[in-house]
Length: 306
Ligand SMILES: [Zn+2]
Image (cartoon, rainbow, N blue to C red; front, side, top):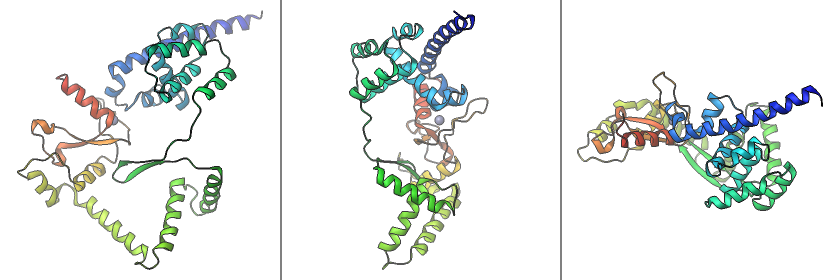
């Protein structure tokens, strides 16, 4: 055999051993919530931003790690090349889709997928967990933005893509959300012909929004709300808008060396001094945190740490 092949075989073995080592270290980071304290909202962000993995590599490692947690024997199987990190990640996907909790079933899946080639694995996975169309989902992520998830058929996709091409002449950076907005505007104009012109209504909405932004912390309404004798956990929309604006719609968790969390989704308003400890609803006592950092803060507070 060529020397170079022997060298490669050794290196491939070392590479697999290192992959498993990385998975085990990730488990430790996850267990200690170390990534959160470093200002990363999720393990995925930590892997992509801090460790410079691609999205796909990060995803596969995190998913494989979840299986390794329950089936420690997987580590050995990866080391000897009986199963790859990619296949382990696919097992994790099956576990998620099928909502499998039983560790014995997970072990059986690992056994079932060992020593299988890629095509066999894909066939098996298609049988067990076909990639189904997701149900429609509309979710607010902050007062001004929502995510919309939907499954569309081929025809509609082609129509949308054609529209995008036509509209992109005017606006090359147009996204699908922009296409939807334009379609909505046209449809609304058609349907609301008898009511007042849309542009007028839109400019009214716009100036109202500006007012909210400009009113800032000195707004008498907010002062009234925070000085109110009757304490209430409820934060008025106006205050919420101020907090989101002030934070630039981004999690405000910042580490000691000034690394700020970059999360822009699932943001929650947090009382710096907890509401339960008499913390007020005044904007000065409020901050915007992603769900992960809000939970982490609660965890640390429970543990009696600052
Ligand atoms: Zn965060």
